[in-house]
Amino acid sequence: MSQPFRVMFVAAFVPLIVVMAIAYPASLYFGPPIGGISRRGAWPERDYVQQLTPEGIEVMANDNTIQVADVLVMGDSFSVGNVWQSVVASKTGLRFKTYNYKDNNNCFLPWIERLASGLEGYAKAGNRLVMIESIEHQFMERIRYPERCAADSLFRVRPIGQGVWHWPTSSVHTQIDIARQFQTLMHMAQVAAQPGKVAGEWVKSAPLKRGDLFSNIQSNRLLYADVDEYRLQWTQADIELAVATLKAVKTRLEAAGFQFAMLIVPDKLHAYEEELLNPLPSHAASDLAQSLRAAGVNAPDVLSVMKKSIYKAKDVYMPNDDHLGPNGHRALAQALVATGVFAGVQSRQP
Image (cartoon, rainbow, N blue to C red; front, side):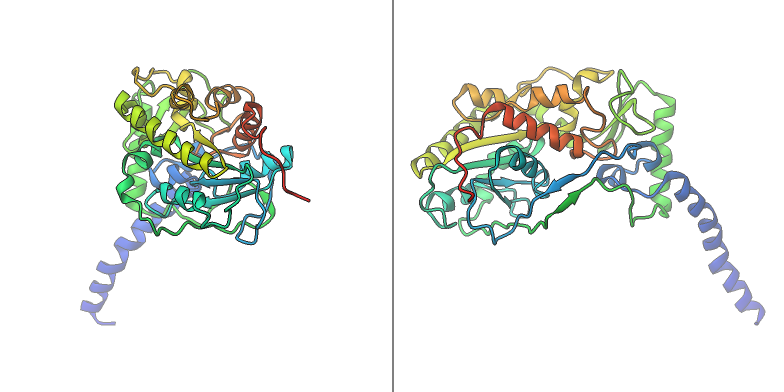
């Protein structure tokens, strides 16, 4: 090997070897990123991954072969796994079929029209319940911009096979990413320097008053996405627009023989807000579903139950993500059944 070649070889590979010698041990220390927001927000998985493994949930199949459904759900990622629906079905005997609008500009209004017009095969509704589900922080966006909805939109039924659902405790992702590791270290330094303050950018870590609501190592902090703060900016005019839109949806569906309910799943930040060390400012949308109910829209009260459920079980929302864990799906299902929202629905199952 010539001298110039050896110099080029050393110049090219020695820095890489040095970087890997640092990055690989660091990746082992931080842990493989598992949760959605811990991974995307560059927070150390070792601090936020759950330490408990709740019992899984028996999930029923959801696919286009379902011809007879008692409850039709249009939902987002909180419904796509058919988890809380399966818990409700096991308690009530009702059959669910769940559509997903997440990949369709977050629109559901054209689907309402398709249902009411009989284009989804339910011309004779027979008192079926149509339930629109939305996570709280995206609700107003889905109401506010109907012009993005196309009349010929295709709404999917994402196939879910029967089985047992668990929150993942392992990952195929790695943390060998120098830029991400640096950002993770910066976040850890922020928390260490000012433990009583909120740290982070679009995924934030907020100090809690107590450390027994989650099972992770940093259980005295709440990891949440900054989109959970959107509702703090909603105005009374936004709420009035939502009320008017959903009252029109209710009228259209009831004219076609359907029942209608609007399910607003509370944001993680909202569910735990009473336990924040630093209180949130007052705002118009403290309880959006209550405003809808006051206007005559069937919006079941799950917020109060979900707020109580965080004291009854750990990891109602996952410590490393903003979605519900098994305990959260059970709590949501129990809350829905307790409201009586399914009381007027008759099962068509043999």
